Length: 269
Ligand SMILES: [Zn+2]
Ligand SMILES: [Zn+2]
Ligand SMILES: [Zn+2]
Image (tube, rainbow, N blue to C red):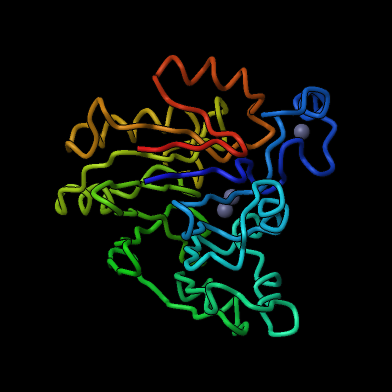
């Protein structure tokens, strides 16, 4: 399976849209991997995860032919993950000769209510702890500790014998999630974990994570044999407040053996 990160910042982007803090100032100066757009990833060549306003920019930057995308998983309705307006660009007069004539979207009922009924889009409502299949994928939705009332989800994605846990946005996983993972004997080849806060302390009941929370999640997953030494662990979704300058994150993550995402980073596992 191939995972390509297209956008790796939290909602405000990095450098943040209107911010002049020292980290944002430095990011503007350095450019490159320090420029982080809003959250989106591509699995293989046909499954998109999340749909922020930066989708258009991602398609242009990475040469993605949007009309070929068949499937879209939405984690939750925060604007850095779902910008429904652009789905309406699939209407007839805006999108000719699409090679995937219908985009299959999978999301919670709440996210579906934000999307409405754009043309050439089929919205499938999914529930936490339920698995569903499409194309060559089997996906299981898990409830995220995030966005109260907004039915946020994160996903176990299985394809060609590999299993990815894509956990954005969420705080430390609910106990029921760990129980479910254990009961279903999931074994993850890759984890992509929310590291919004980086080194800023946040309780395990918070709606995002930083290194210390991630370390506890990793320890717990290891204790239930959901991961082992071969599991690739990548941190992603960074806020400017925690200092997401790439070299800084690389230094911190290397202490634990984690990879650090950046816009355009591709992992094959
Ligand atoms: Zn987010
Ligand atoms: Zn800033
Ligand atoms: Zn969010």
